[in-house]
Length: 198
Image 1 (cartoon, rainbow, N blue to C red):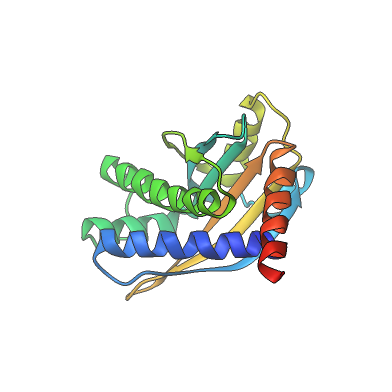
Image 2: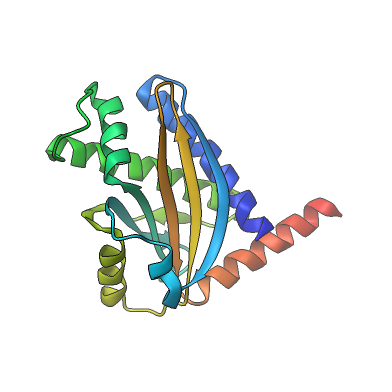
């Protein structure tokens, strides 16, 4: 768990720096909690609140590694896209410009996370092109799991908070690793931490 926390903090730092540059304003991002949840209990951790999910397949040296999802409640999604698009109305429908902005935000977050993972572990991990889904969170993840062609037993939650000048934005980065992927990553992280302690 310590290794995953370290991974989350490094990924968050990379993502905050890139978002700050893109938005030309200071963005701070924290990973206050990391949780590993049994897939059977995911309904306890993902609400049926409408959310924006930007879904990526992890690609690179680990074959069929799994998925990474950046998920934000719809209210936070609109606040974030308002910041990008210079708008203020939070009581509105998602439009095509919002969708494009959300794909870009998700791409930045997940690319930074996978870059940090790849840099730490010395392996190649790349995101697929993003797929944006606006739906109830639990239903969207159940639909994704019904379509994947490999086994997923656990879900790793990196609960994130982004803070900019005006407000905070909540979101979660979810890793749905193929059954063997999580153990491979944890094994590599443990070796890395041990080498730093010796």
